[in-house]
Length: 127
Image (tube, rainbow, N blue to C red; front, side, top):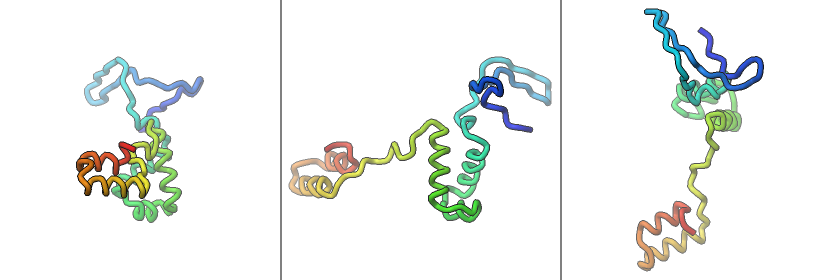
């Protein structure tokens, strides 16, 4: 069985699933059905994601299985993340410079701020 096309071959608009069929009992259901975010992945991206998951996200195993370097794996992963509608690294905590980190720890030790306030500063949630 082939994967369903996600783009119209004529105008390149996004295709939509409107009919599902059970070959076992010949039941059909019509309506509008979502394909899901993974339908946005190309065949190559989908294969990469399957390999990445099969290797439990362990870069060394992915390198060995696909015979590609760490930077290539990272680039392919970022491409797949973008195709799924996310921006790689967007949810990463903001970098806190050494001066801010030191000041927060000094203020905590001096009792000027609470532990919760210090944690927010160290996570980059406050300046």
